[in-house]
Length: 312
Length: 137
Image (cartoon, rainbow over all chains, first blue to last red; front, top):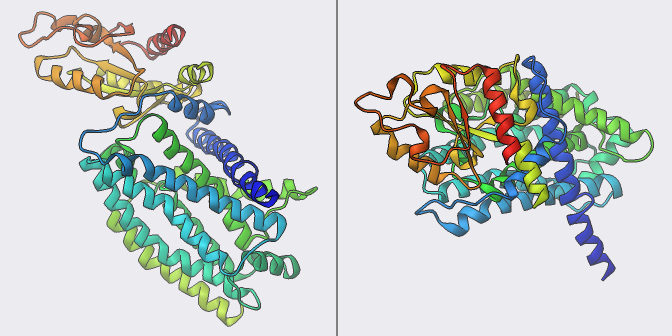
C-alpha cells in the first residue's frame, strides 16, 4: 500500500508533475529572458510563464464546429502525461538508481508522444492550417528520429558492457568519467542538440507552428485551459530533454551537496545553447529540414558511431 | 478567481486585427514590441491566432466589406476578451467618416473597452491605453 502511495507521490509531486511543471516554467522564463537580452530588450519578469498558465486556466475553451471533441481535447493531455512519465523515470533513475532493462528505449519512445499528441489534436480540429501544421510535424518527426536514435546508440555503445539501461550508463560514467570526454560522444551530443531543436519545434525547425505563415499551425484552434496544457507540455519538454542529455552524456544529475550547483550549471549550459541556436537562425522550409536531418546530420551521427565502435 | 484575474492582468496576449487601416497604426504597434519600448516586460505579446488572444487590437475605419470578419473574429475569441480601438479611425472614423464605404467606427459593431486616439498614436499612447485597460480589468 505504501509503495503504491509512494509511486503516486513520485508521479504527482516530486520528480513528476508538480516539480517538472514548476522547473519547466522557470526554464521557459530563462528562454524568454535570454531571447530578450539577445534582442537588446529587457524581457518579462520571472513569474511571467506562471501568469500565462493561470490566465489560460480561467479562459473559455472554444471547440470549433466540426472538430472531433474527444480527440481535440484529450490529445494534448496524452502528451502531458508522457512528459511526466519520462521526467519521473529519469529523476528516479538518477536519484535512486532504479532502472529496468531497456528503459532507454521507453524514454526515446515516450519523448515522441507529445509531438504525436499535437498531430492528433491538430488533425481533429478540422482547421486547414492546423492540418498543414500536423503534416509538417509528421515529416519533422520522420526527419529527426533517425539521427537522434543513432546518436543515442553511439553513447550506448561506449558503455562496457553495452547496455540499454539508464542506471548502468550513469554508473559507467561515475567510474570511467563522463561520456562527453570521448570524441565520438561530442559528435553525438551535437547531433542530439540539433534534434532537440526540432523536438521542441524551436527555430530553425519551428516549421509546424510557423507564426507568420500558418498562424501557430498545430496550436491554432486551441484556447483556454487546453492551450495551457499545450504550453505546459512544451515547457516541460524544455526541462526534460536537457536532463535526458545530461543523464546520457554528462554523468547524470544529483541533488546532494555541491552536486546541486554542478547539475544546475550543466542544465543551464544546455538550455542556453538551445536558446542561442533558437535566436540566431531563421526558419527553414520543411524540405530543407528533412534534407538537413537525413543528409549532413545523419552522416555526422554515423561518423560518430563509427568512431565510437573504433574506440574513440 | 483571484489568481486567474491576476494572471489575466499580467499576461495580455494581443491579436492584432487590421480592419481597413492605412498601416500607420500597425507600424506603431510593432514599435511597441521593439527594444525601445518592449511591452513584453508587462507580459504583453502578439499571438497569431485569435483563439489564444485576451485583447483584440482593432485598427482602421471598418469599411463595409470588413464588418462580417470583425464580428466573426470577436465571436471566435475565447471570453473574457477586451477590445482596444486604435487610432483616430478606430475611435471615430477619422477622415474617412464621410466615405461612401464607411460602416461606422469599431464600437458600432463590437463592445470596446479602451480607445487610443491619434493618427497614428505614439507607442507611449498605446502603452498608456493598455495600462488603463489593465486598471479596468
